[in-house]
Image (cartoon, rainbow, N blue to C red; front, side, top):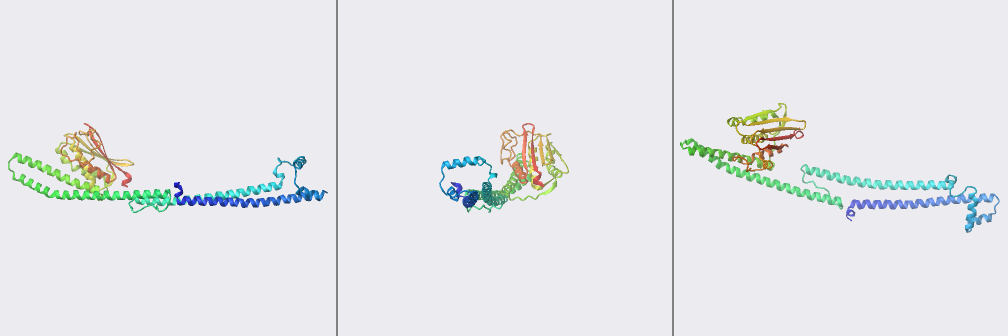
Length: 414
């Protein structure tokens, strides 16, 4: 059986068996002493009885024969009838028989002592075994917590036999696998970051050259409307390419975990006002209305640059999916549990088939009228919010508008 491969359990069983055998031997020794004591009391009784008979005139030879000769059933019945007349029978109370009462007390005391010793020994053995196992589990728990907190070199003690050691060995194997997987993932992310960074840097040089060529063409003022139209379009596309390269670099850095947030407490309303102000000109040109609501007393711990990027992407997304005279409301609120930032627009809304995919990178909806976006801004916003310990969710009704909610639990901002 598997349980007998456990060294500690085998040791416990051996100690218990030894304790039981020792108690049995002790019981035999006690029984022998009790038997000797009973014999002594019986002989004392017989001596007293024989002396009584002698002193009352019975022949000594008859007395000796009564104690030494074989008895018949007739002798037993005659004696029983005689003594029964004096009330000396099986139903007599032991309190009238001092010798029997004394033996009873001795037997009861001996059995009580033996039972107590056996119980104390067994409980002590089990308690010590439980303490030993608990110490093992406590040590294992400390090692698991240390591993979870980043000390990936910690392992459980699994160099013994038994079910617990097998469990620890399995946990160690899992920890080794996880460590290897985490290292591989980190390596992959570093490779991805370096690759995207290299590609982005390689693209910056030709991109800068194209922008310079485009500016030269614009400065030439050829008077050709077609050329002028195409230079404006090229400028827009070059700007899109530059934004895409920058966003890819930011995502790569977030994925690789190399971003260290410079978190400080900021008045949230003031921060949102500065973020909204960046888009006031665009909103004015497109005849859209930005509204900011909130409480001046709300403060939040965050990296101003990165969170500004996340909220800016959400406001830009709202501007891209609304038309003239639509409203975009930015608000913040505080509850006893969370701090929440909400960006709500009265635009076209999101199709139900897209609602679960909009945070995927480069996702393109077949229902969207926006053909200019590259599908990375919302992914970047979500990654930044989650890096701050928050969550980004969306609710939308087609034709009625969209609401993005950024929620920060207060426990992560204390």
